[in-house]
Length: 201
Ligand SMILES: [Ca+2]
Ligand SMILES: [Ca+2]
Image (cartoon, rainbow, N blue to C red; front, side, top):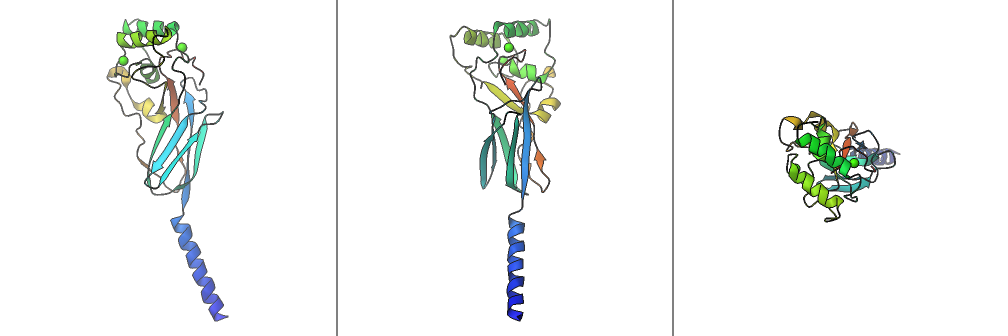
Protein backbone atom coordinates (compact mmCIF):
# COMPACT_ATOMS: atom_id res chain seq x y z
CA UNK A 1 0.00 0.00 0.00
CA UNK A 2 2.84 2.35 0.93
CA UNK A 3 4.62 1.49 -2.28
CA UNK A 4 1.50 2.31 -4.26
CA UNK A 5 1.31 5.72 -2.58
CA UNK A 6 4.93 6.51 -3.44
CA UNK A 7 4.34 5.37 -7.00
CA UNK A 8 1.27 7.61 -7.22
CA UNK A 9 3.22 10.59 -5.82
CA UNK A 10 5.97 10.09 -8.37
CA UNK A 11 3.41 9.96 -11.14
CA UNK A 12 1.86 13.22 -9.90
CA UNK A 13 5.25 14.93 -9.95
CA UNK A 14 5.96 13.68 -13.44
CA UNK A 15 2.56 14.95 -14.55
CA UNK A 16 3.14 18.38 -12.96
CA UNK A 17 6.61 18.67 -14.50
CA UNK A 18 5.21 17.78 -17.91
CA UNK A 19 2.51 20.41 -17.51
CA UNK A 20 5.05 23.09 -16.59
CA UNK A 21 7.24 22.45 -19.62
CA UNK A 22 4.28 22.10 -21.98
CA UNK A 23 2.50 25.30 -20.98
CA UNK A 24 1.05 26.91 -24.06
CA UNK A 25 -0.93 29.97 -25.10
CA UNK A 26 -2.76 31.43 -28.09
CA UNK A 27 -1.68 34.03 -30.65
CA UNK A 28 -4.49 35.35 -32.80
CA UNK A 29 -5.81 38.39 -34.60
CA UNK A 30 -7.61 39.78 -37.58
CA UNK A 31 -6.65 41.21 -40.97
CA UNK A 32 -8.82 43.99 -42.40
CA UNK A 33 -8.29 46.32 -45.35
CA UNK A 34 -8.22 50.07 -44.80
CA UNK A 35 -12.02 50.21 -45.17
CA UNK A 36 -12.50 47.58 -42.46
CA UNK A 37 -13.35 44.71 -44.83
CA UNK A 38 -11.90 41.29 -43.84
CA UNK A 39 -8.92 40.13 -45.88
CA UNK A 40 -8.98 36.40 -46.63
CA UNK A 41 -6.20 33.96 -47.54
CA UNK A 42 -3.51 36.04 -45.88
CA UNK A 43 -0.60 33.78 -44.94
CA UNK A 44 0.44 34.36 -41.34
CA UNK A 45 3.68 32.79 -40.16
CA UNK A 46 4.67 32.48 -36.53
CA UNK A 47 8.27 31.51 -35.82
CA UNK A 48 10.52 30.90 -32.84
CA UNK A 49 13.63 28.80 -32.27
CA UNK A 50 11.67 25.54 -32.16
CA UNK A 51 8.37 26.64 -33.64
CA UNK A 52 7.45 27.42 -37.24
CA UNK A 53 3.80 27.43 -38.31
CA UNK A 54 1.83 29.08 -41.09
CA UNK A 55 -1.92 29.56 -41.23
CA UNK A 56 -4.28 31.57 -43.44
CA UNK A 57 -7.02 34.00 -42.52
CA UNK A 58 -10.61 32.79 -42.83
CA UNK A 59 -13.61 34.50 -44.46
CA UNK A 60 -13.82 36.91 -41.51
CA UNK A 61 -10.13 37.77 -41.76
CA UNK A 62 -9.32 35.89 -38.54
CA UNK A 63 -6.30 33.73 -37.79
CA UNK A 64 -5.29 31.77 -34.71
CA UNK A 65 -2.33 29.77 -33.47
CA UNK A 66 -2.99 27.50 -30.52
CA UNK A 67 -0.54 25.57 -28.35
CA UNK A 68 2.14 28.23 -28.73
CA UNK A 69 4.88 27.86 -26.08
CA UNK A 70 4.85 30.60 -23.43
CA UNK A 71 7.81 32.79 -22.43
CA UNK A 72 9.44 32.47 -25.83
CA UNK A 73 10.51 35.12 -28.30
CA UNK A 74 8.41 34.99 -31.47
CA UNK A 75 8.25 36.75 -34.82
CA UNK A 76 5.06 37.07 -36.82
CA UNK A 77 4.83 37.97 -40.49
CA UNK A 78 1.98 38.22 -42.97
CA UNK A 79 1.91 38.04 -46.76
CA UNK A 80 -0.81 37.80 -49.39
CA UNK A 81 -0.19 36.62 -52.93
CA UNK A 82 -2.46 38.13 -55.54
CA UNK A 83 -2.78 39.53 -59.04
CA UNK A 84 -0.88 42.81 -58.85
CA UNK A 85 -3.58 44.41 -61.03
CA UNK A 86 -6.30 43.75 -58.43
CA UNK A 87 -7.96 47.11 -57.75
CA UNK A 88 -5.47 49.13 -59.83
CA UNK A 89 -6.94 51.46 -62.46
CA UNK A 90 -6.41 54.89 -63.98
CA UNK A 91 -8.76 56.16 -61.27
CA UNK A 92 -6.02 55.44 -58.72
CA UNK A 93 -3.50 57.31 -60.84
CA UNK A 94 -5.72 60.38 -60.60
CA UNK A 95 -5.52 60.19 -56.79
CA UNK A 96 -1.74 59.84 -56.92
CA UNK A 97 -1.36 62.69 -59.41
CA UNK A 98 -3.45 65.00 -57.24
CA UNK A 99 -1.34 64.03 -54.21
CA UNK A 100 1.96 64.68 -56.03
CA UNK A 101 0.68 68.05 -57.26
CA UNK A 102 -0.39 68.98 -53.73
CA UNK A 103 -4.05 69.31 -54.69
CA UNK A 104 -5.27 66.48 -52.45
CA UNK A 105 -2.63 65.18 -50.05
CA UNK A 106 -3.09 61.61 -48.78
CA UNK A 107 -4.48 61.59 -45.27
CA UNK A 108 -3.70 58.09 -44.06
CA UNK A 109 -0.52 56.05 -43.75
CA UNK A 110 -2.27 53.28 -45.67
CA UNK A 111 -2.67 55.61 -48.67
CA UNK A 112 1.00 56.61 -48.61
CA UNK A 113 2.05 52.97 -48.57
CA UNK A 114 -0.52 51.88 -51.18
CA UNK A 115 0.68 54.48 -53.66
CA UNK A 116 4.40 54.05 -53.02
CA UNK A 117 4.24 51.61 -55.89
CA UNK A 118 8.02 51.28 -56.37
CA UNK A 119 8.63 50.91 -52.62
CA UNK A 120 11.05 53.84 -52.54
CA UNK A 121 9.81 55.47 -49.35
CA UNK A 122 8.12 58.40 -51.09
CA UNK A 123 5.22 59.10 -53.46
CA UNK A 124 6.61 60.45 -56.73
CA UNK A 125 6.09 60.39 -60.50
CA UNK A 126 8.08 57.13 -60.62
CA UNK A 127 5.15 55.46 -58.82
CA UNK A 128 2.83 56.81 -61.50
CA UNK A 129 5.06 55.38 -64.23
CA UNK A 130 5.16 51.88 -62.70
CA UNK A 131 1.41 51.79 -62.02
CA UNK A 132 0.69 52.94 -65.57
CA UNK A 133 2.97 50.25 -67.05
CA UNK A 134 1.02 47.63 -65.07
CA UNK A 135 -2.36 48.97 -66.22
CA UNK A 136 -1.19 48.99 -69.85
CA UNK A 137 0.00 45.40 -69.54
CA UNK A 138 3.65 46.28 -70.21
CA UNK A 139 4.51 44.62 -66.89
CA UNK A 140 2.56 41.95 -65.02
CA UNK A 141 3.90 42.79 -61.59
CA UNK A 142 5.33 45.75 -59.72
CA UNK A 143 9.12 45.29 -60.10
CA UNK A 144 10.00 46.37 -56.56
CA UNK A 145 6.89 45.57 -54.59
CA UNK A 146 4.48 42.84 -53.57
CA UNK A 147 0.80 42.81 -54.51
CA UNK A 148 -0.20 43.47 -50.90
CA UNK A 149 1.61 44.84 -47.87
CA UNK A 150 0.13 43.32 -44.72
CA UNK A 151 1.29 45.56 -41.92
CA UNK A 152 0.89 45.59 -38.16
CA UNK A 153 -2.16 47.78 -37.47
CA UNK A 154 -0.76 49.34 -34.28
CA UNK A 155 2.53 50.24 -35.98
CA UNK A 156 0.64 51.63 -38.96
CA UNK A 157 -1.41 53.92 -36.74
CA UNK A 158 1.55 55.24 -34.74
CA UNK A 159 3.79 55.86 -37.75
CA UNK A 160 3.76 59.32 -39.29
CA UNK A 161 4.41 58.96 -42.98
CA UNK A 162 3.00 62.34 -43.87
CA UNK A 163 5.95 64.11 -42.26
CA UNK A 164 8.75 62.05 -43.65
CA UNK A 165 9.89 58.84 -45.16
CA UNK A 166 8.02 55.57 -45.32
CA UNK A 167 10.90 53.77 -43.61
CA UNK A 168 9.01 53.28 -40.39
CA UNK A 169 9.13 49.85 -38.83
CA UNK A 170 5.82 48.25 -39.74
CA UNK A 171 6.74 45.02 -38.01
CA UNK A 172 7.01 46.83 -34.69
CA UNK A 173 5.80 43.85 -32.68
CA UNK A 174 8.72 41.68 -33.83
CA UNK A 175 10.08 40.00 -31.86
CA UNK A 176 7.58 39.66 -29.04
CA UNK A 177 7.40 37.44 -25.97
CA UNK A 178 4.52 35.09 -25.42
CA UNK A 179 3.02 34.99 -21.96
CA UNK A 180 0.33 32.88 -20.36
CA UNK A 181 -2.13 35.56 -21.53
CA UNK A 182 -3.28 35.22 -25.12
CA UNK A 183 -1.60 37.61 -27.57
CA UNK A 184 -3.67 39.52 -30.12
CA UNK A 185 -1.93 41.02 -33.17
CA UNK A 186 -4.05 42.67 -35.85
CA UNK A 187 -2.94 43.59 -39.35
CA UNK A 188 -4.03 46.02 -42.06
CA UNK A 189 -4.02 44.73 -45.64
CA UNK A 190 -2.84 47.40 -48.10
CA UNK A 191 -3.18 46.70 -51.82
CA UNK A 192 -0.30 48.35 -53.67
CA UNK A 193 -1.47 50.73 -56.41
CA UNK A 194 -5.04 50.90 -55.10
CA UNK A 195 -5.72 54.36 -53.69
CA UNK A 196 -9.50 54.13 -53.46
CA UNK A 197 -9.52 50.70 -51.81
CA UNK A 198 -11.63 48.79 -54.33
CA UNK A 199 -9.25 45.80 -54.60
CA UNK A 200 -10.98 42.52 -53.72
CA UNK A 201 -9.60 41.88 -50.24
CA1 LIG B 1 7.74 55.65 -54.55
CA1 LIG C 1 -8.55 51.22 -57.15
